[in-house]
Image 1 (tube, helix red, strand yellow):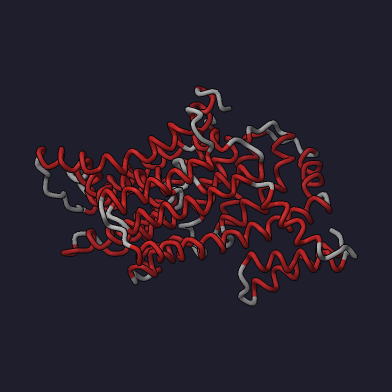
Image 2: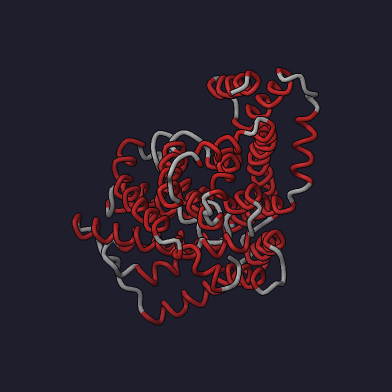
Length: 430
């Protein structure tokens, strides 16, 4: 490790320890590297500008964030909740199953785990807590766990970022997430069924069939969003980035004109919230551009690939090792940072071992989503805590059963690549 690289890492870690945001800390660390190595510090600005200018796919990120915010502000999420209640509310522990199914449906529109938890999550927790039907900590735990499905089912903001650093097809990654997302849904519902029967959770009152027909009809317009998005992408009507714009436009049409639940004031608030969230992501991306320039200059990726090549290790053991490391990193690091900084470092090693990059991309995103509910840096746990005031300690104790079941699903994805690759291959994308 060279002296400039060591100084950069020390500067970055030091700034983060003092409470600096990750994005500005990475940019500052990169500038320190340029200064110590005797390079022009203006290179940092050049790298950032060139990175954003050449990354058209990044436009999808703020557009998907905007679409999710619009759906949360209108009555769209309420209608999706009614659809889920009609479908699985009759099961024991019905509201917990509704929680999972709503996350699955909502994930086909938002692409964000945090948007899922912050949107319908609070509504579901309040429903589960009413009349002491479910322990508050269990309601919070299943809400956080089910929100991890959000970025796996297309569209997915993390997969857009992975496509940026790996130069893979966004369409292939979106298709690759369908099987794993459904697997995670089934796994969580099995866990809920086991816990519900063991702890005698209630069964919801059955909804008359006539009422179910009405609920399903009311839910058709928002349910058409993923159909329009995926149909347009794979039918060649528009690119994934253009699909994000279509999602935002469709959400506005539904919320403002069909359901009349979006006014001028709330629309302005949504725009402000979207700008804030997008700016935070953009700062991390900018810092990642600088960090990746440093890693390329120092040839860290090539050195890692050469080092790994010295071991007699196959693709599957390597995936297991990398998954374990990402699970550990996920306890402390932000998912966006890991995607943009750590993934580019190991890409040459993946190529040397002939690992399919679409398979790896989906696996690593699932890794990071599990990290969102893993203490001590489980972001989704903090989001649910801030929304509901439910203490973190009891919530974490209830979350472990879901972490274990999701780890089992992740292991299946690693050992059986066709769970990820069958659909992309069938449609000619991988």
